[in-house]
Length: 260
Image 1 (cartoon, rainbow, N blue to C red):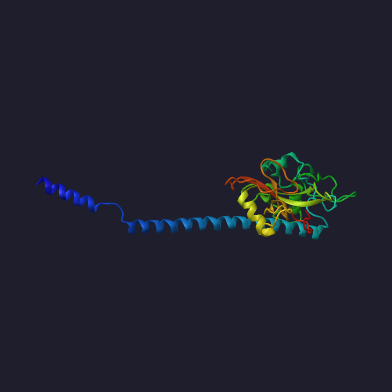
Image 2: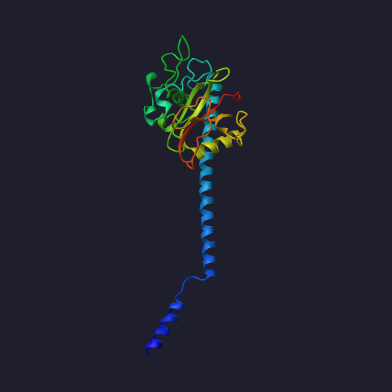
């Protein structure tokens, strides 16, 4: 009797054995399909995020040119010299990151808090602090190019819940020219690279070095990498497999193509 019980238990254990090779192969195939689908879905989401930022940038550029067409000057260019007065490289609030508190919640800000440029007997920008970072946005609201009922803090928010800014930068190279820019603050490095490729195309060889790096050529360039500000752009940071690190990028929206 004892032997019969042992044989029955052994048979039962054999019946409850692990997966066969065929079953394991099927499980691995299914897991692979799920993983590929998940990665593809993530890639599509990231591409959509990049596309939205690119559309935002182009939309802001279009509004700036439309403002120029209607008023004869760019938004924030209160003295009409062709340069937006916000100096993005010098203002302490902009050197590392642009904070949300920089923008006003006042729907009708006065000159000292970024009111729109106004007319006057001695020039188009009388009483306006042209270097105030709110002024370009207030100009766009005044011209009804954006919803005038939305405050600047809402208008300037980008797709990562950080900020866009209009301003100007003076090159440290060559002719040291001053140009107008839109800066996108605090976006992941992978997004910055995607924006660069979407606007400037695949990375060209950089400045004769033989390396591919769009961070310092074209219209889209690395503006800040968490360590330093780069007026004329710079090589993309060494990721060390960290493409999620936050950076800021600048987009030159003047009609002339950057020469350096």
